[in-house]
Image (cartoon, rainbow, N blue to C red; front, side, top):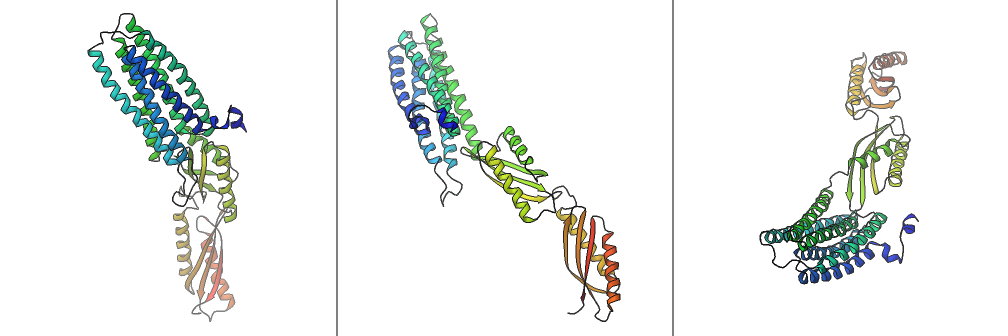
Amino acid sequence: MRQADRRSGPPLLGTGEGVTLCGSLINLVLVGVKAAAGVVGHSSALVADAVHSLSDLASDIVVLVGYRVGRLPEDPEHPYGHGKVETLATAVVGAMLVAVGVGLGAGAVVALRNPPEVGPGWIAVAAALLSIGFKEFLYRWTVRVAEDNDSQLLLANAWHHRSDALSSVAAVVGVAGARFGAPWMDPAAALVVCGFVVKVGWDLGWQAVRDLVDTAVDEDLIREIGQVVDGVDGVRCHHDLRARRLGKDVLVDVDVAVEPELSVIQGHDVARAVRQALLGRVRGVRDAMVHVEPVGARDGGPYAEGPRKEVVAEAEALAREADGVHGVHGTRIVPLENGYLLNLDVEVDPALTVREAHRIAHTIKEAVRSLPGVADAVIHVDVHGE
């Protein structure tokens, strides 16, 4: 409901496809207007600005395809969806901007060395001002739709529009300066335009490449995710929190520590609660893999794998050393709040009396209970050889 309220006009104009198509039409018109005004008005800055708008038009096509494919649902060949297509399209848009900027920059440098004999006309200023108005409008519109649809690709295209508006401002400054007796200002402004283009293209492309190679999300988002995880009932702490982007979505992997005495079902309930909290409270999180482990399993505490094996080995060694014991098997270890409960099956001579077997079991129990970390022990007596 919130997103629908923020949009105005026909439903298509509030979608990524709608704003991109309208932007393409406006860019097409601006390319013609600025190119014609630049040629007629003898302005290299405005011609460069027209080429920038042409790159906007080309990027609109990439955005339209990338946005549409990237939003397709999962299928057997793409079980994680098509979000990487949207990220790849963002990288392509960035590369296009860098290439265009470098090419225009080379031309601007040549023009600086050989300033034009005929200064730019005021028609170039009028065309640049027209471009500023339309491109700023496209920027604001596209940003709103990008936020509504949570799309980095649309946001990248919005900044493409904003860079075009800024380049038009540089063109106005250059043309005006040239008209007042400083012809070098027009190619200098064209060089500034190229700087805008390269900077925006590099930023967009580099971020997209980082997302494609599963670079971690920013620290603020990691911190927010960690706070949500720690706030779930039953979670004592979390480990190995990782998050990466898949197009517009964020995928999370996290290990949570819970009380060791919880049952498997209770541990599963905690994991499910963590996942639901992340999906419902952290913007952009599409899925979360939550692994449950007992408290201390990572820091060498009493429930870690190493200490458990050591306790079992020591308990079995004590049992085998007891007089009358022929073997030990079936050892089971259960974590309790105050330590371990050990269950041992010991084999004794079948000729022993019940009293003698009980004495052996009691001796082993007391010895095992004396081990560090052991809360209690239960000794089962079996007949040797059966």
